[in-house]
Amino acid sequence: MAVHVLAVLAYKEGDRVTSRFLAGSVNTNPVIIRRLLLALQRAELVDTRKGARSGSRLARAPGRITLAQVFRAVEHADTFATPARKPNADCPVGNCIIATLEEIFTSAQKAMERDLAGKTLSDVIEHIRASGLCSKTKGR
Amino acid sequence: MAVHVLAVLAYKEGDRVTSRFLAGSVNTNPVIIRRLLLALQRAELVDTRKGARSGSRLARAPGRITLAQVFRAVEHADTFATPARKPNADCPVGNCIIATLEEIFTSAQKAMERDLAGKTLSDVIEHIRASGLCSKTKGR
DNA sequence: TCGTATGTAACAAAATTAGTTACAACATCG
DNA sequence: CGATGTTGTAACTAATTTTGTTACATACGA
Image (cartoon, rainbow over all chains, first blue to last red; front, side, top):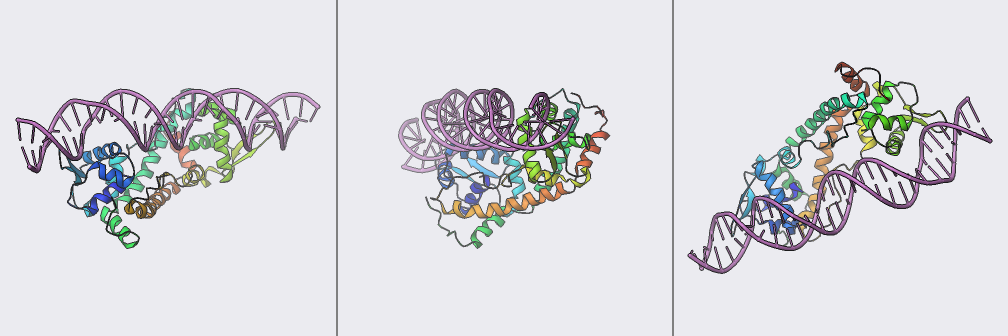
C-alpha cells in the first residue's frame, strides 16, 4: 500500500496531494493514509505540510527512493522474526532456538532488502507506464 | 514455529514423536501441531503414521532439508504479495499497479528463499548446539 | 479387539489490522 | 485577523486472521 501511495505522489511530482485524494485513489480512509504518511515522514521519504491548501509530496526524486527504504519505513523491522512467541520456559529447546531463528531470519530479510534496494520508485513508475494499461490521467 | 518442530524432530532422529509431545515442547495445542504437520507432510519433509505407538519423524536427513523448503511448505506462497486488497476499480493507478507490485515482491521473495535455501536443518541444530545453552535433554 | 494417535470439523478466543468519528492545532488565503 | 482546509492524534468499532479448544471418527499396532 505504501508503494501505491508513493507511486501516486510520484505521478504528481512536485504537487502536494492531500490525504483525502490519496485515500480515494487507494480506496480507503484518509486517516489510514495519514498514519502511513507519518511512517514515511519519519523515514524522510515524503515531505508533508499542515494547514490549508497543503498536503504531501515526495521528499526527493523517485529515482532516489528505493523500495528497501520504503519497506523499512513501513514494516516494523521485526516483520516475522519473533512474532511474540510464547515464553514456553518449560522446554530448553524452545529457549535456545529463538536466538538462532532470529539470526536466520534477519539474514533472510537482509537478502530480501538487498533485492528491494536495487529497485527505485521510478523503476516502478516506468514499469507501470510500460504496461500500457494505465493512462496518465488519474481518476478522481 | 515449523522450524522449532522440525528441530525437535531432528534431535530425536529416527524416533517417532507424537503431536502431544511436540505441543508440549512448543507450548501449544496438539491440534495446531497436527495442522502444521499436514503441511510438512505435503512437502514430504516429515513422515507421519497413524495408530498406536506412532507419530512423526523427519522424512530425510536434516542436512537434506533446507529452510526454503520449510518456508514454502508452511507459508501459503502469497505471503504478502496481494493481501486481499480491495478491488478499488475507481482508480486506474490502483488497477495497474497490482501486477507490478506482485512482480516486485515475488522477486524479493525469491531472493529471500535463495538465502534460506543455503541453510539446512542440521545447520540450525549445529548452531543451537554451539550456543551451548541447550543440553541434549529436552524437557518433558 | 483394545489402546493410542492422527485427521478433521466446528467452534471459541485472542490478536492484528482496517476503518470510523471526532477534534485540536495550524498554515494559508483573503 | 479570521475563515477555511488539512494534518496529527486519540478513542473506538468492525473485520479478518491466527490461535486454541473440544469432540470424534478413523486407523494402526500389539
